[in-house]
Length: 509
Image 1: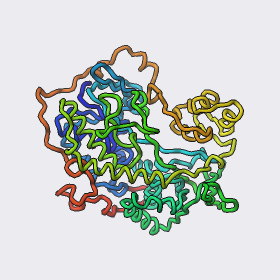
Image 2: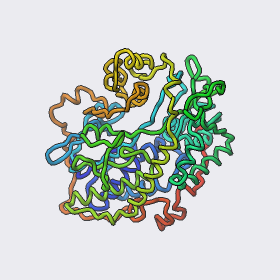
Image 3: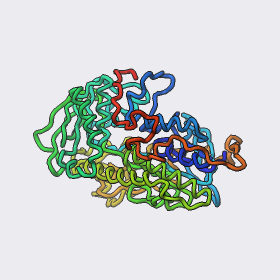
Image 4: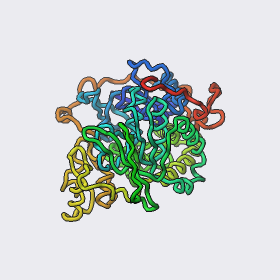
């Protein structure tokens, strides 16, 4: 298959980029592992569930409608169930390798002149005693169950950890009929107050969630953390305790809360496997990009959470800028930054806000002290915290790679995505880039194939002289910030946050 631009990821950043490039005459193909576009943020229920009110489960639904309608009228080709495992650079083109379908066994290759990585992020998971019990899920996992499957993980839940994701998760579960026993946030009000200037734009949204939680009688516990999950064959309750100013558990403050579900999360981490495999220059844990969202590898752009976790609005701004830059570069012209000035302004403002959120909501500084030696850290390889500590204290391991070689931590199916940050924290060192050639496990039969199959060689129809198409309703173009007063003259309520979505009943949409 041949195209001009391959976008990896059909979330807000990928869709905004695809629409911006398509509107300027670029042939765009979007690959995504889900069964439809939207990404994690705009995850949709399966069609077979016949959801009557999916908008009740979403924030910024009107933004999604504009993206969806823009796709429907564009020339963008969206290929769902395509799990990208490698981007192969060539002399003049890139070959994007993917595995097709739920079984991920049939190979597909797409060739393109440029690649845009909109690979999103994944949850930051920190272990604690009992975290492997059935009934303990990530905060994002609980949200995905509700949005994608219209199911709830249990009858009584505790939502815990740190970060802004906890608010919509707790609100969504409560609206779906789950009794939320507590919202446990390790950050304190003073942490947030220090970032008040850059977080001012987020306060109305947070106040809306707080009002909904109040209606459902959900009690927030700030500067608290879960120290243990209890149960034999499944979760029966958790112990929460207060934290002191140094992030240590205060003695005598533990309290047992009965529950059958614990939704826990400590923020997000950027998904950079494909960028690492291409050799893109990192910027700490993220992919380094310039003002056009270009990486250090010619022909490769990146946008969204991979360049820094910041939410859907920031991803839309970055994607739009990247799409316009790709279109100009592929046509051999110099991009005009004035054309995306509004998106650039939104990007700068939202990046400051994202940095402030990251500073306000950090995991407790002394979280490693809560982990007992028998606590599993790497579930894939069943490596305990005691084994990691032994590798450091007795065997002299000084970095994550050496710990991995000595303990097998990070060698399992997830390749360290779940345990990498925890292993680094226990070892007292910074997480290192994966530097894996492949972004996901690949069957040996796929690697043994010398040439792409007939399916891969199917040419994509190409116009003789592609004409720029009329601009699609991309919320990041003429008015890149969905919160602006008038982003779409057809939109009677342009600010998605002003909408008071109908609340779903438990088990329904």
